[in-house]
Length: 297
Image (cartoon, rainbow, N blue to C red; front, side, top):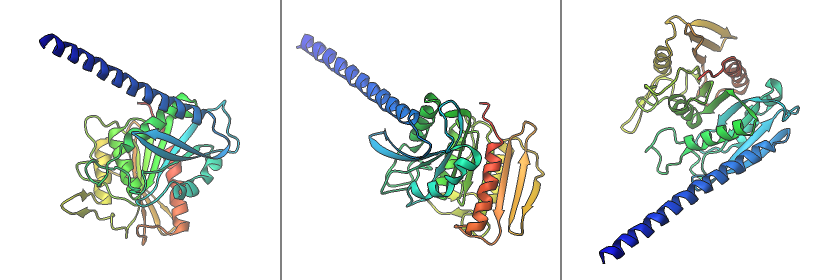
C-alpha cells in the first residue's frame, strides 16, 4: 500500500507538471498569436481580439495612414470610463494618430462590467487588467511596432483611476495623463517599487472628484493633494510654472532637476464631462506633455 501510495504520488506529480507545462505553452501560444496580429496591422483602424486570463479582450488599434513596418512608433493607450467600450476613446483619440504620427490603442474592459480594475477587491468581479495591458505592451515591442521608450496612457474616470494604478505598479509607461477622475488614497500612493514617472492630471474644478471624497469603501485624494503626492515622490520643486490657455484652462507644472514633471490641468467651471471645445484643447495639451517624455527605466 505504501509503495502504491508512492507511485500514485509520482503519477500525480507528473500530471501536475504536465498540466503546468501545458498552461505555460498555452500562454506562449496566446502571446505569439497577439504578436502576429500586431505585426500584421494595416494603416488606419484595426480591431484586435486577444485572449487573457480566460477572457477574450478587445482592442481598437489606429495607426497613421503612413504606417510602415520599417518604423517604431510612440503608443498611446486610452481607457474608457465605467460602462463604456473601446469605441468612445478610439473616436476621441484616433485623429491624433495622423496628427502626431503615433499608434492609438483603445483598450476595452471586460464586459458587461465595463469598469477597470483600478484597485483589487473593489468591484464585484475582478479582472487582471494590469496583466492584460502589460501583455499588449510586450507584444507591441516584440512585433516591432512600439518604441519601448515612448509608451503612454490616458483614461477618463474609471480609466483615469486605472492610469494611477499603472503609474504606481508598472514601469512600461514614459508618462501618463489621468482625466476626470480621483486617485485612491493608499492604493495609488507611490511606494518603493514605483519609478519616477511624469503625470498630468486633467480635471474640471466642478468635477465631484476635484475635492476628493471619503466613504467607508474608498478615500479619494483631492486634485491638489494628489499632485502634491506625486510632486514630492518625483522630487519636483515646490513652485509650479503656471500657463493659462484662454480664460478657462490653467496648467500648473512642477519639474524635477532630472526633467520629471507633474502637472495639474484645471478646467474652470467644468464638471465630469468637459465641454467639447475645452476637452479638445486639454487633449492636445496632454499629448504635448506626454510626447516630450521618454522612458529611461
